[in-house]
Length: 337
Image 1 (cartoon, rainbow, N blue to C red):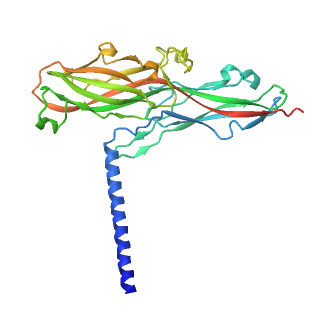
Image 2 (cartoon, rainbow, N blue to C red; image 1 turned 60 degrees about the vertical axis):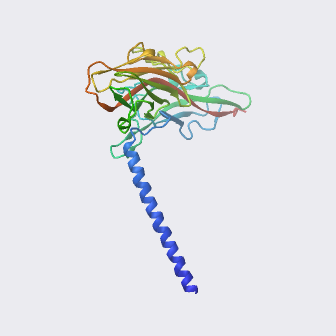
C-alpha cells in the first residue's frame, strides 16, 4: 500500500513539472511574439541622472582643507539620442545650492554642457533591447574656503536640462464611405480609441480617438500628456541654446510648451490639418499649467479613390526641453579648532 502511494505521488510530481515547463514555454513564446509587435520600448523617463557614489562625500572640512568633487551619472533610458550632432543637441548639468566663490570656483565652473552624444535605448527587429548609453559629468576640485564656527549643513543640487523627443504611433482607419458595415470592421473601424504607442520619454500621446466626419474626411483627436517627474519647456528658436536653461520659476513663461508635428501620411492624396496648429500639421502648443491637452486634426482625401478601406500609421513627434534635479545634503565640519 505504501509503495502504491509513493508511485502515485511520483506521477503527480512529474505531471506538475511537465505542466510548469509547458506553461513557461508558452509564456516565452507569447512574450517574444508580443515584443515583435511592439513599436517602441516605452517608458516615462528620458535621461536618468544620479550622483556618483562618494561624489560628493557626506562630510567635508572648512578652511580649504578638504578638496572634493561632485559627479553626476547620466543614463539615457529613453529612445532619443541626445548631445552634439543629434536632433537633441543640448544637455547641460548645473550645480545649485552653493556659492561658487566659497568653493573656489566661478559661475562658469558649476555649469557644464555635454560634449559628446549619448545614444538612446533601441529595440531590435527581433524584439531584443539594446540599453541606452551612460556618461558622466564631474565638477572638481571644489574646496570650501570659509572658516566657520561650528558644523553646518548645505544641500547640493544638480540640475539636468536637456532636449528630448518622443515619437508616438497609432494605427488609424481610412475609408471613402463613412458608413460602417460588418465586412469593413473586420479590417478596421472608423470610430474609437486607437491605442497609441510611445517611445520612452517624459511626455506622451496618451490617447488617439478617430471619428468619421463626412465623405473622404475623418477627425483624429489626440491627447498630449506629461508623464515624467520634472518640468518641460519650449525649445529656444534659433541657435541660442542657452536661451532656456530650465528655469523652474513660476515667472518663466516658457514653461509647458511642446513642439508638435503630425507627420504626413504616406498616401499623397491625404492631407492633415490641425486647428490648434494654425490649420497645418506642425506648430507649438502650450499645455495649460502642464495639464493634458487635446489636439484635433482632420484627415481629408483630396483626390478620387476607388472605394478602398485600409489602415495607415499616424506618427506624431513631440520635441521639448526637459528639466529635473537630484540633491543631497553635505555636512561641513569646523576643524580649525
